[in-house]
Amino acid sequence: MYSIRQVVGSREAALETALVLRQVVSKARFSNIQQLIAVIREVGRRLAEAQPKEHSVGNTVRRVLHNVREEYNSATKGATGASRNVYSISKFVLQGQPRKHTGGAAKSEARITLKENDPSDPDSFARALKPVLMEAIQDVLDELETVYDNVSKNAKDHIHSDEIILTIGHSKTVEAFLKSAGHYRNYTVIVAETAPSYQGHEMARSLSAAGISTFLVPDSSIYAIMSRVNKVILGAHAILANGGLFAISGSLLAATAARAHSTPVVVCAGQFKLTPLWNLYHEHGALDFADPSSVLGFDEGKLVERVDVVNPYYDYVGPELVDVFITNDGDHPPSSVYRLIKETYDDDDHEL
Image (tube, rainbow, N blue to C red; front, side, top):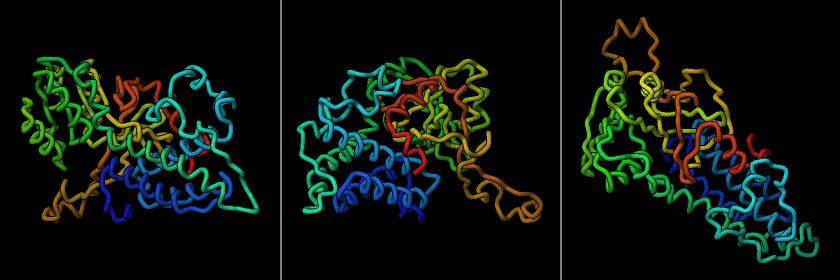
């Protein structure tokens, strides 16, 4: 499914991963939590290996593992038990805040009876725990299904009337964010066409159809018009542990031009794109490559024979070029991405 790219897009891949894991957990047989964790990790590893450049697959597996452990600990320790993350500084600072999407408490607070490795009834542990595990996975699915709405709900606080916004490519998260702001503010969007994929054309059509004043410009004009731009809004393919990100090719050009003109750079992305990895490639790091013929066609026969044509699909944008990340869990500077990752995933799952 992933390896032949039947599923395209980070959110779609994350949703499919969560659905697969829900099915795996519902049918799995296990008599202790370690067996269940091993099953989920094995399935997650195979899914991630099928499409290693789609980080949202591994991120969703890590999030499910985190929720499974959380529900198990709540079921076994209950309200009187000590939190297993009591040693975490970030958890210590945030103690007292309710867990999101769970009504303020873990589903298993009702103190279900668990008996691991019961020789007389090996399936009793799974029968008792599966209902709360299914709800924990449903939390992940609910978050993914509402991510666009939750990212864009405060758009009017970030975009003001008569501002000029620059964006590049066609990020569905950014599209929802801009359309949400369009209900409250009159502003102008400049869309870079994002050659050679020209995804900007689709974004410009969509925004224009929504009644937003939209201009389409070639990528070569980004630096020239940046002095008139109030804010740059980018999408992200993956947000890395150091606060950097992989984004559509051309994003580095826009972010660097914005830095030269002291223009704020805002990144809109769901938290499922938070990845506990660093830039494993190089500074110009193409995570993936597109068809080179769209840059230099094969009809240029003599020229093609003499050159190697590289068409990177993503740019690596460093954390020093980003001012704020707007996620479905609020606004965060690049320096606090590590804290979000610490709270969203368990350290044991950074390597599946």
